[in-house]
Amino acid sequence: MAYSLNQKIKDLEPYEPISGTYKIRLDANESPFSYTDEIKEKIAEAVKTIDYNRYPDPMAGELCGAFAEFYEIDKNLVTAANGSDELISIIETAFLMKGEKLLFIAPDFSMYKFYSSICEAECVQVNKNAELEITADEIIKAIKDSGAKCVIFSNPCNPTGQGLGREDVRKILSSVDALVVDDEAYMDFWNQSMIGETEKYDNLIVLRTASKAFGSAALRLGFAVANEKITKALKAVKSPYNVNSVSQKIGAIVYSEKDYFRKSLESIVYNRDLLYNGLRNCGCMCDDFKVYATVTNFVFIKTSMAFDIWKYLLSKSVAVRYMGEYLRISAGTDRETSVVVAEIESYLKKRE
Ligand code: PMP
View (cartoon, rainbow, N blue to C red):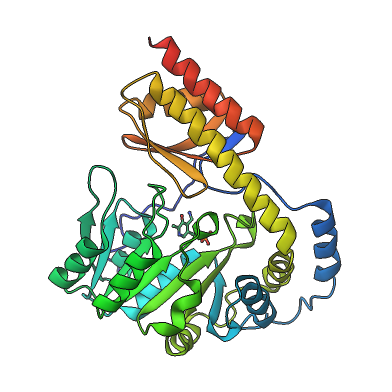
């Protein structure tokens, strides 16, 4: 007798972020800012009230209420999850039947493709152009030509840093029957959200996360916003107690600290601009170093030296994300930004 793993999982490797410890971590698009002492104290008080012997609220009512109030939307249209990663997995598994097509617009967040293989959907890929852009019309055509039942894209996009404007997303939504999953993990850094328009469409799910602008990656909190019918289906298919009581409690505090998180967001955007401008100056030193425009909290760069620069930065205890002929660098603190820019400059100067 011998049990063997099935075809779709037998060669999978567990997800491993970069190993080792580095003084500066700019590889995961996290916020460089943790909570203030005042917020930490509020949290310490609040978690004292948790009944640890009881299961969490399955619908995370208080948390969804605080989230909805922050974005000024109807709390009944919000589904909370254990990170937006969980929602991507739930959506692809439940809203696609085996063999149905999912449209993936490359390059984009790799987990979309990964989960489609687990749920045995067929992933159809369409590529962005050399500038890493794609139009709404091209997306609509790709959905129609492929017969995709679902399209999922990050907007603005991880890793390119660029986004589709609201008008483009509206055009896609009203031109296709497919489910459109608009993953707005980085939309707090831009102003083209569809979060307030989910009731107008029967094929829209907007995803959000607390992991980026809200500096709460440790909590694992993600949210889906959709019309009533889709929300009911999402709540029915998620596992009942998917968000633990500690994250629910802390998340509710985080989303009610409006002033702090708005200020923190401004600082991240300010530092992102410092990073972008610093990297653009590096680009002036060398033709082989293209810096893409960004509306996110990171900057994407194309260079044939990507691997060597990545290794060099690691040797200086600075971690950024290496992706083939690209590097993706998250906005850090002022100091982290000046260190990473100075190290890249010094690398480029050394090779002159
Ligand atoms: N969507 C995008 C586009 C992301 O970049 C990420 C995280 N890197 C996620 C979703 C997952 O975020 P979470 O921490 O909420 O699972």
